[in-house]
Amino acid sequence: MKNLDRDIIDFGNGNIPQMFAKMLIPTIFGMLFSALFCITDGIFIGHGVGSDGLASVNIVSPIFTLAVAFGMMFGIGSSVMAAIHLSQNNIKAARIITTQAFLATLVVGLLIGWSLYAFADKILVLLGCGDKLMGLCRDYYLWFIPCALFVMIQILGQFVIRLDGNPRYSMMVEVVPACLNMFLDWLFIFPLGWGLKGAACATSIGSFFGVVMVIFYMTSKCRTLALYRLKHTLTSLVLTLRNIAYMVRAGISGFIGQFSISVMTLAGNYMFMKMLGEDGVAAFSVACYLTPVVFMIYAAISQSAQPIISYNFGAGAYVRVRRTFRMAIVAALAAGLSLSAALVSLVRPIVSVFLNAETDAYDMCAAGMPLYSIGFVFMAFSQTVVGFCQSINKSGISTLLTLMRGMVLPVCAFLLLPALMGVNGLWLSVPLAELLVAVLICLLYRQCLKL
Image 1 (tube, rainbow, N blue to C red):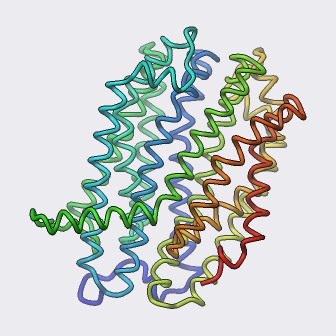
Image 2 (image 1 turned 30 degrees about the horizontal axis):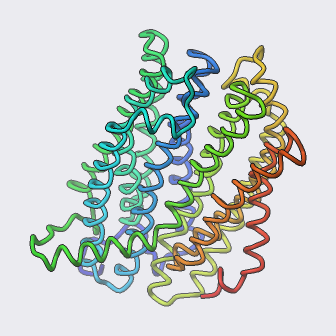
Image 3 (image 1 turned 180 degrees about the vertical axis):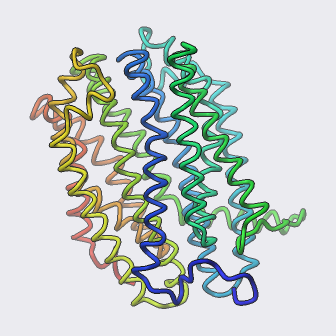
């Protein structure tokens, strides 16, 4: 990088606490706005459409999570690979990796979008939509599909921009679309009366604006990771496919981590519907809106540490790697304790943001959310360890941990714990899964944390 314009942040030589803070503050601020992007629909729909509308959005929400999962996979995979190349002063390779990541994301996004349109009714049934909610689900689903492509590109762009040394612009790629989405949610749902269709349009338009900001940065403001013109040869195609495979391998745990939210949502929807009906699903939907907020805060901490860790890991500066990881763990645990305490002490005001106090769903949620919040501390620990493993390219152990915390253990807990504890078991299923993953990490300490 010495022969190019110097990054704002010098990952190899800069002061680690200052770098981490410089990355974390805009990243976590942007993540919070991204969380608002997710929950604004819930707030306006809960009051503008009702609990059935909220339940319908929760049924469709795995589509959004799937799109985020692909964006995270290519974002983590490409940024880890590019950071290692940058630490070895191989700028051309880093640019090629970045370009290939955008190309792969575009192709996958278009394929997903086509599939969602072509098999709309079958997908809604698979998501658990019944006859009562089919009309509402379909209104939201069809207008929400463009967001799937847009959000993938937006998330990938944020990883690239952050690695390029501009965390503030990366933050704005989240802040501006979130603000636009909030305004359009209000406009489309209340003055215009478009209901769920309006909420979906607001989300798609907001995420499209995020893509425009990413394109502007990559074509006009990029310092080091500018797009590279790929050759149109068979050899180039083979190398592109090989690099994409490496990205997938490095970022697959990020994909599973996000996709697991969909699995958790599906399992939870099924069990809450079985035990408590539509009101139970509406109550659980509040937890499903808040979980991404918590997850994004932890993701902000991991993603702030990731370029520092990956760069120094590639350069063999293991002391700096360990120091950065320790800072991330402390920050994540502090956030986890604060979030859990806040939700317990402010549970009714928080739930009332989504649900009217006169509804049965409100009472169910107010009783269950304090139990659900117990898992936030364990989630902080496991998410940070998984992020560290991703950053040093330990894809095997990060994938194992993500599978256990995101799919295997939560599904098992949802199926078994309610039979033992009743309704409380529904709310404690996710915390139990997170606790067991934390125990597993302690048992696999050397495999997780040894460099």
